[in-house]
Image (cartoon, rainbow, N blue to C red; front, side, top):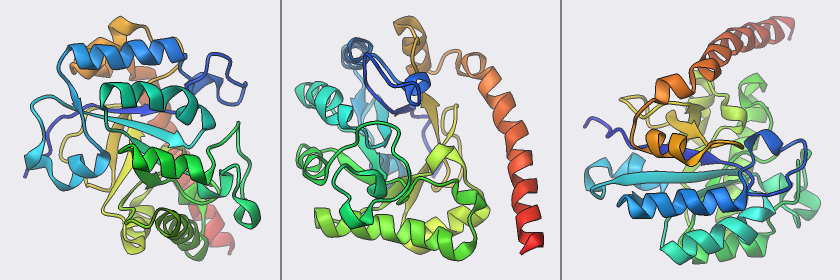
Length: 261
C-alpha cells in the first residue's frame, strides 16, 4: 500500500528562554500553541507515529503527526497541557539515559532539564505515545554493532519495563541512520522509526519516515504552508544540501573506523 503524504512534525524543546544548546530547535510556547490551534482550525487530526506506519489505511481525513525528540521537561510543562486541551495525540521519543531520575542508568550529556519517569508515565496516561530515542543519544551510525544493539535494546527495554506496554517506534538521534542502523532497529523489535529528511513521506521504508523540522523563528504562515504540503522543498532547500554532503562524510568516517579496527 502506498504511504499517504502525511506531514510529520518534529519538535524538540518548547521554551521561551532556551539554553544555547537547544536554542536552534526550540519553539516559543506561544508559537507552539498557535500552531496547534491552526491544526485544529483547519481540521487536522493528529495520530501517533505507529498509526501512520502500521495502519496507513485507517487514517482520518486530514492526518498529521506531532513528534518531540529527546524528552525535555518543558514537554510536560508547556506542550502537554496544550495537546491535552485539544485532545491531540503525539509521540515523544525518550532518551532513557538522559532522564532526570535515570539514577544508575544515567548516560550521555543532557542538553537541558529532562523529563522524569513519573512525567513520562503521566504523558502516556494522557494518550501520548512514548517511543525510543536510544539510551545515551549517540550518533548511531558511527557505533560498532555491539554498542549499537545495546543502545537500542537497553532504551526499549527500560521504556517497556517502566511503562508496562510495548514500545514499537523510535527516532534516530540527530536523524542519523543507515541501512545497518535500520536493520538493528528491526532486530531490537521496532516496527517503525523516524529520521528527519525535511520532506513529506513518499514510499520510503517504514523504518525511515521523514519529518519536517519546526524550529525557532518559523512564522505561522510558513507553518501553515508546510502542513498543507506547500513550499516544503523551498523551505528546507539549504537543510537538504547540508544533509546530503554530511551523509557522504559520515559514511567515509565509519568506513575509516572499520578499517582501523
